[in-house]
Length: 423
Image 1: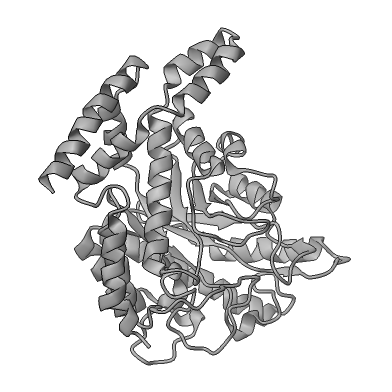
Image 2 (image 1 turned 90 degrees about the horizontal axis):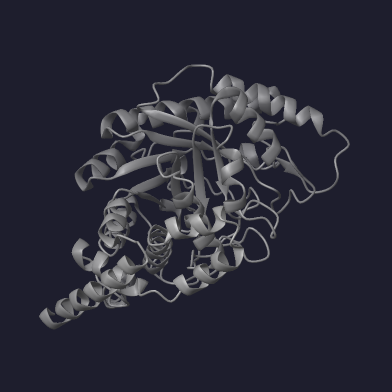
């Protein structure tokens, strides 16, 4: 162990000198990285199951594949799995919670009746672990969502039910933020749309706008709750038309001063989030990112260190957007160890941020300003071979989490001792 720490320190000091030659202060980069929280998504731990036990299919254009053993079955198991994950991730982070993870002590509480008391265990746990919480209404996996429509439903009674759910969730978000002393980002996403081509595209969007107005009618202190709205290009069962499109929500966010949520899987496969950020942030104050890895469609694969992820982190660093962007993960893979899925995805997100913070940005900007695009391209490519891994290992070691692939040993033990014993 002592020799490992010495090797990490020796490698870091060499890397620090090499980065300094390029005008990069590694200590400054590490301090900035430490201040950026990532919001882990609770639904990776139990395949978006929740604890309502309504018997409804997941629906909403969502699909989880795989049956790897060890899925969390109770709130206690889910929190234990999350604790193990956080222990293997450097930095101080958050948890993103869905409304269907309410704890109602065996009583039937429908979604239009949810209240902060049904999340007091989550709030108490988060406070004890020093975590912030974010929140999401659950507009799917419910009998009143079986038609594929919720806030844009033509039936006023069904719309009223879902509007009340949205109102309750904002109140829950505010209670969370007040209790934890950090704003809760409450994000609205709905599945509403048509499988085949509609003849009326306008009507559902008018109904959605009216529903959103009703949900957001009561002002809430932004120190406690921040409202976000999330678009989607298409879903399973809504391939031809989605009511809450990117254009719809972008306009609504600008007009009503809401956070716009950009999900990496909710656009055309040739679109990338880092190309949108500088445009969107010209017109909205803050953005919520749902970082995922879509393969050919919104397939929500575990986040890995792809060019797209690096590009997203680079845009955040280059634009100086860290104080205006909230970063959350959003994927669900039931084909691999679920704790490992959390750890891999979050560590990769943090790696991408560190790579971006270690970029020789001042030199690159000078080359670009001088019109030396040859030099810019050459420097971008040469920077790829800088000893980033040594800086990453130092960051992990200083945070008291395993460097390199050593964290997998811990996950294997947890699987053997805990996960494998779940039926």
